[in-house]
Length: 121
Image (tube, rainbow, N blue to C red; front, side, top):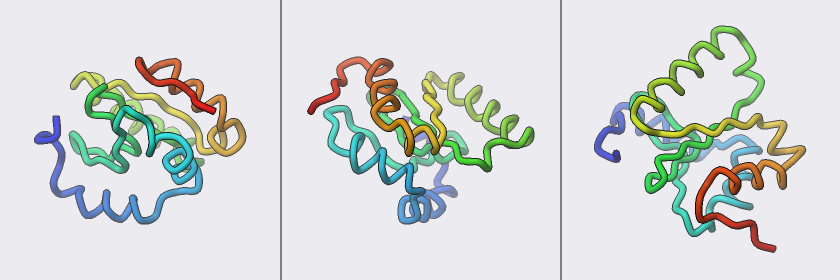
């Protein structure tokens, strides 16, 4: 799947890795970065930049802020999800507010949908 990524988005992906939202930083540094299943941050794929992607599982975790509330943004998000699903990539979506306010529940939600992951103390 790596060879399908969109090279024109690589500079944008690098910029997004440097300028993660607080919710993205929290999920990455406190949960995904050290998990046995390898997740990558800000991955260009099929014309989109995915917040977190596990190539071995073909799983994308997308965090949405308030900018995703408009009808136009929701249409764009639905199209992205359709394109990714068509390529066999599952998409899990969470709001930034969910990550900030219900971090343990978000982590449990990810673990519940990803085979082989466990929450450790």
